[in-house]
Amino acid sequence: MATLKEQSKKEQILTGGHRLCAGCGHGIAVRMVLNAAEDPLVIGCATGCLEVATTIYPYTAWRSSFIHNAFENAAATISGVEAAYKSLKKQGKIKDDFKFIAFGGDGGTYDIGLQSLSGAMERGHNIVYVCLDNGAYMNTGIQRSSATPRGADTTTSPVGKVIPGKQQFRKDLTAIMAEHNIPYAAQASPNNWRDLYNKAKKAFEVEGPAFINVMAPCPRGWRYNTPDIADILKLAYETRYWPLYEVENGEWKLNYKPKKYVPVEEWLKLQGRFRHLFRDENRYIIDEIQAEVDRRWEVLLERCGEK
Amino acid sequence: MNKKHEKVIAPDVGWRNVTRAGIIPTAGNAEYYETGGWRTKKPVWIEDKCIHCLLCWRFCPDSSVIAEDGKFGRFDYEHCKGCGICVNVCPSDAIDFIDEGETSEGRNDGE
Ligand SMILES: Cc1ncc(C[n+]2csc(CCOP(=O)(O)OP(=O)(O)O)c2C)c(N)n1
Ligand code: SF4
Ligand code: SF4
Ligand code: SF4
Ligand SMILES: [Mg+2]
Image (cartoon, rainbow over all chains, first blue to last red):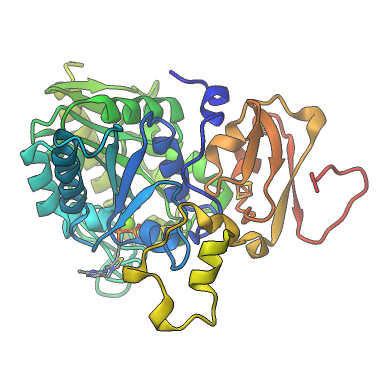
């Protein structure tokens, strides 16, 4: 485990001067993940805030090879690059070792890019795929995705007379990726930077596909006080809404167990997208969210052999 | 900005001369794009209180805390957007957060 002192001595692959909003979780998560790479990288991004904000022509915020592609095919593109590299390496046309990583938003990963991701994982490419989950299509103006939490106010699940925010619970993508029986799948939070660093390191090191789902808060879409991102991230795992775990060669492991029971509303109440849930008539939704968080937590404990 | 790049993408360059397929030949040239003007508030380092834990460096989304030799070095005000995250993660209250434009004697803002 590299200390921050050691990490800070490595070249930073993401430069300043990108156009993500001030305080965007994407910048934090990406910098942490890339710090764990030992080899030169080829990076790809699904369309989304990260890709748009870091590659506005004629600028690129990546001190690295970067390949542009569309919204739904980051995993296909990066697996194609990896396959070409393997071939060139075999022919002796490339000498150096490279690693391949794609970043996608939750829209680009849980929804529109799911089949290309699933295919890449099944084909067994030696790639890392990182989902930066901010729970909505932020780059196009906060539309709901299958990662959006139940109850959240988005522009396509708007709070009003008809509905009180998003009606469905979120998809459990990390578990779905783990069920691909890939060598490494994990869920992480930048607030636990040690844990995220270790996971990124493992992901780069394993032979074959690796997937990490990283919570990446969006101050714009979540409507919290921008400087408080660390508290938002922390409460997400303390309330068990966003458990930290990993699945290595089929073995499930819980990486963090909260010491005490913190109700999920502690996390909800800091975010404007859930404000309406605290009205008397909507309280039942908080109860339903809590029940679902508890149920999923029990399932996870079971899988991790914690009970 | 390096010469080759400058030639390729200056505003007066016509479409015939832009890079093929929009390739950007200089990795990391966003460094030459300043986002410091976005700031309304500004983090200011208080050297005496700093314990060099580098949490500010770790959490900055804009690579704008510059570590030098494993310690806090300086803020990169050309890119810092003034989000205030470093201010809140600092365990030692070693970062002041002041209105942009406010000046105060004795403050070491690294400039
Ligand atoms: C095929 C296609 N459909 C729609 C779009 C428009 N589009 C660009 S970014 C985006 C949303 C991205 O959301 P997400 O993947 O969650 O990333 P975020 O911006 O939230 O980080 C959409 C819908 C597109 N670029 N391509
Ligand atoms: S809208 Fe949200 S995700 Fe997109 S750049 Fe801004 S803060 Fe980041
Ligand atoms: S977080 Fe605070 S104490 Fe730690 S290095 Fe930064 S300024 Fe110094
Ligand atoms: S205010 Fe934000 S952008 Fe500026 S140095 Fe601190 S964390 Fe980085
Ligand atoms: Mg998103």
